[in-house]
Image (cartoon, rainbow, N blue to C red; front, side, top):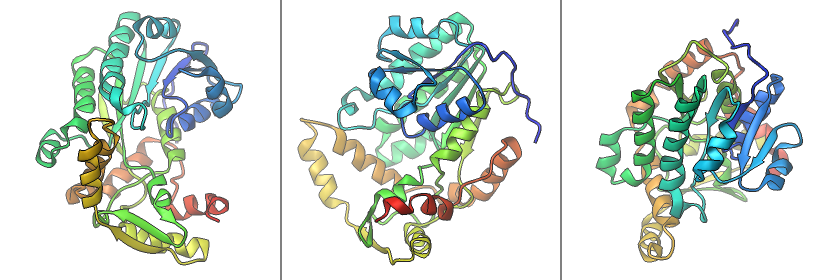
Length: 312
C-alpha cells in the first residue's frame, strides 16, 4: 500500500504518554520508521529504562503549562496517548486527561504544530454515558473531542477498543475471572497494532478531521477468548463470572479516601454494557483499518503465542 506520508523528518514528533501501554508501542513504531521522537515524562530515567536510549526524553509534568510550551518548541507533530487510570493518578484524572490536553491543543495551535493524533475511547457517546451513570469517565474525552472539532488543527482521533491485555490480565492460574461476565461480544486490539496505526496516522496528511475506530479482526466474548487462549497454550482456561456487587460496595466505602475503585466500577459497568450494534460493526470497522493503514492485524491467537512464556 502506498501511503501519503509527510516528508519533514528533521523535526521531532512529540508523544505524550510515551511510556504507557499504547504509548511505548507508538514510540517504537515511530523510531522504526526513522523518525526523531520526543517524549515528555515525569521520570526521565524511568522512561529511558522503558523506551531505551533512542527517543529524546524530556523530564517534566504534563500539567505544567511552561513545560508544555517548552517541549512543543520545534515539534512538527503530536501524539496524545495519556491515561490517568492508576491508583495514584486517578484523583487528578480531569486535570491530566482534560485540562492538560486542552492546554496542549491551545499551545499547539499557537505554535502552528502541523499534525495531532489523539487516542480516545472506542466510541464515546454522551447519551450512553448518561444512561449508565458513567459521565465521570466520558466527560474528559467528550470535552477534548469537542475542542478538536472546533479548532483549526489538523487532527485525527483514534478510538481504541480495549486492549487484548484485558483477556490475559483476568487469567489467574487455570481461570479467567471476569467481573460481571462481560458482554456477548467485545472488540479488542493488540497494543502492537495501535502503535503501528498511530505511528502511520501522525505521519499522514490525508485523514484530517476524522474519528477512526480501532478494533481487532473480530469481536469476542470472554468465554470464547478463554477457549481460544486454551487452545494456543495447550492447557484449559476456565471462564468464571465474578459478581460485581462486592466491588460496588467497596467503591462506595473507599470513595472518600481514593476514587480508584469508583472509576473501576464504572469501567466494568461500561464493559458489561458494551453496545451490541457497535460489536456488530466490528468487521466493517476493521476492514476500514486495513484499507486505510498498512499493517498485518494481530489476532488473539498471535497475541497468546507472544505471551506464552508469561503464562506459566
